[in-house]
Length: 500
Image (cartoon, rainbow, N blue to C red):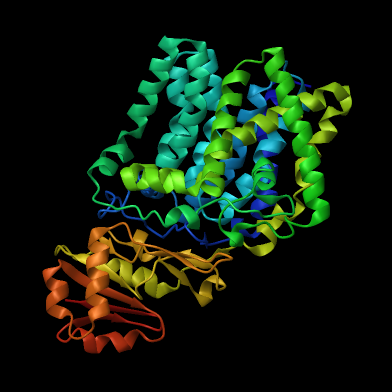
């Protein structure tokens, strides 16, 4: 086999897995699901408001790329890039250069419950960090500042969650290589974190400790929360489960594969594979963070009450990304004992999670925005007058008929070049009943209080610096009586835009 093709095989496998997983999502239009909100002609703007800067700098990266390519093409390239980068990176970490084990690592890391669940939650920016994680670990183990800076770029583009899981793995790997390398890695991570770290430190956001229970890992199969986490699942939102993921037969086979992978990784640690010890420490630490929210929530609530920055630990399941990489390398190590038959093991990750295919059986698909969304975008973005836009109804998520009823974060939060005020309250259903996580943005809480008060709101909204009110839904005209004197800038089948 030509050497160049040999090196490209994991990337080609990642591309094939990406096409198989995304399926209908690669059609014309945008994929809109939960936090995955791409919009046509996204504006280049700073993170608005006092909430934590979760979309910095990922939104800016998308806006810059969309100045060159159509935004829907940018989204598809990013999503496919996650699979290609993840597969090729995991393969690059496998020592020896044998094709079979490299393809096994590629398939295991690019096709698992962690990637599937985070994709179904719309966490594409986090997955940039996940995809770049093996490259960052490899660079930390081998040394060299240019190599490390290049490997950290995907996480830097993804923002704070992407960088957190990267730091969790890179720092212990660097520490075991020496203090100088640890200082270099820490400095590089701090440098690439500045775009989101500076606004985070300046933010006036508040973290509701109720989010600990809302975002705690949960069992998504018959083997409990810990079993789900070890099998790289356990995300807090039941709607992010892959169809049939919890079936006894599938879950049992996945548990066996997980056990083989963990045993294989333990062997790599004993054999002294590069970065294995540091990655093992990171995997254990990530699993411990995830278990804290599930089994010791009181400790985490206490930390959040002491400092809001600990709120990043609420969604503990995201920190098992290093465990996913460790299991991919472990399965590759186990497969290496099969000689030429090792390449057949590359099919195992797909076979034990088959319903991730075709957009998780239609849960991911592409749709077009109705024309009036683009019309409203043009009206607002061409207006040079200052002032924020309030998006109604007052709630974070929508379920549009034109999007097949799929739940998605309000697209208005990404559509306009001015600050958008929206309700970032989150209501999470649990077995014990719904949990309400209070909004982070103080300005959103202020607007919410005004809306709850009722009555004429025109003067109060103007005093709050509001220039536009966008109302979506069939009952949009009910709001007109509450803002006397407002001018109708647009009225369509779904959207009503009012200018104060």
